[in-house]
Length: 177
Image (cartoon, rainbow, N blue to C red; front, side, top):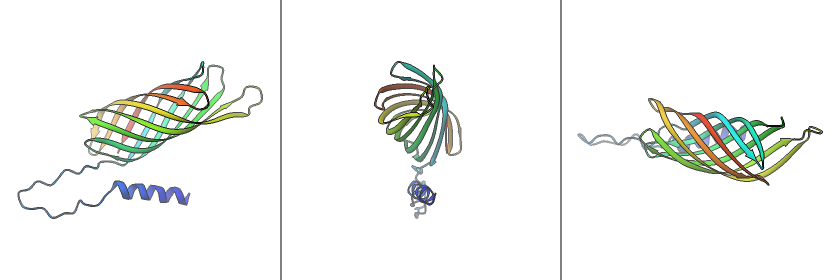
C-alpha cells in the first residue's frame, strides 16, 4: 500500500510540473499551460473473441498521466470482467501505456501493454491463466467539457496474444480530469 501511495505521489509530481510562476513582461499574454488533468476513468461494454469463443463483459480503466491541447499520455490499469457464451468466468488485467492525439473534441490513439487472462474451468472451478501482450486503438469524442475536465464516448479495438489469439471491441464512457 505504501508503494502505491508513493507511485501516485510521483505521478502527481511529474504531471503538475513547476513553471507556472514565471515573471511576465507587461503586455505579453501569459502562456497557456500545456497540462490539464492527471486522471482518467473508463467504463464500457465489451465483446471479446478468445479463439472461437465469444466473451461478453465490462471493461474498466484507471489511468494516471497528463493531457493537454495536443493530447494525452497515460499509464493505465484496465481490468475486464466477463463470461463466455458457456458461462465461464473470464478476467483480464491489462497494464498499458496510452497516448492520444486531440483534434478539437475528437481524439485518437493507441495503447500497447501487458496483461494476464484467467478463465475458470467448468469442470472443477480451477482457473487457466496466461500472460501476454496487447495493442489497442482508440477513437473518441468529448461531448462534455467543463473547466479542465472532459467526458467522452470512446470506441476501442484491441488485439491480444495471451497464449492464444484474442480480439475485442469496446464502447465506453471516459472521464478525464
